[in-house]
Length: 360
Ligand code: SF4
Image (cartoon, rainbow, N blue to C red):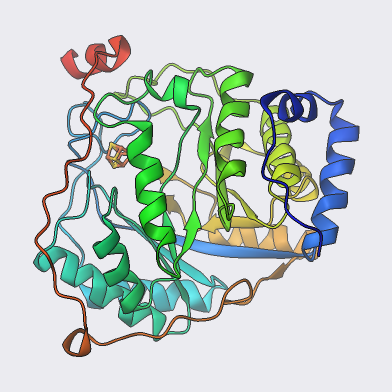
């Protein structure tokens, strides 16, 4: 297998992003075939295990408590509820369950212990388990790893420059620090971003530079198209075109050849042909299930139809990394430290976030 290039410059990545589409897709498809089976797609199911009421101010997110959206919050799901959903996901072809909680950061205590139990339970179903719980410390990453976590998701969202226009309640460096904490364990990293938030092409490129420079590069990179939800600061944003999605997917594939590139939010707005173009351009993972946390996603039957029409196969679990071993809670060698980490709170003002917050 070829060595992975990490020292991509902005100029190099921008040049790729701006290639004529046919040339770009051809190059991406060529890289894709070298590193992956082009007819196999990994399918993940995303479960919102704790919805809404989040103290953060991410400008794209309907779960932020400060915005006036229709999202109904709920408490942390039980282990049994999660197990039932995981079994359903497995029977419809998913190899991974990704559990999302609308938290700023993980706090040691009964709720985190419950999430650890969910991780143990799903790993024992021989499915890959991913969590997205906000910022975590090294010790918390170790506890998740010990429970059998396969992947941790923590998106960079956009470039470092544009991040300040999207979120004021934490800094880009906090994201990088959490990814670094995950990297101190055997848990794989899932980190990507969102296009359509009003960012420039240079911001998209900037995010890809940041991700491509990580060593190792993330094992999984979700590419989301903004779903503009009423009540959020980005409610009136124009949808991104399919060609922007194709460009982003293809460029990601070229600069991070070994990564699973995941077509994430925004698939409901894409035609079957548009999605097929993205698969050709190097996407090899999707989220299945009729909801992505709180926003709509294609029906599982539609996805099955699409897979059938395109002759795509489901990727089996643990192809990219071995299944972790689960250590039971009573055998754990790691004590909760009750840490109170000082994550940044830059708290500069973002006008559109303030407007959305103050809306009646
Ligand atoms: S994206 Fe996550 S951290 Fe940001 S407001 Fe939504 S739930 Fe909270």
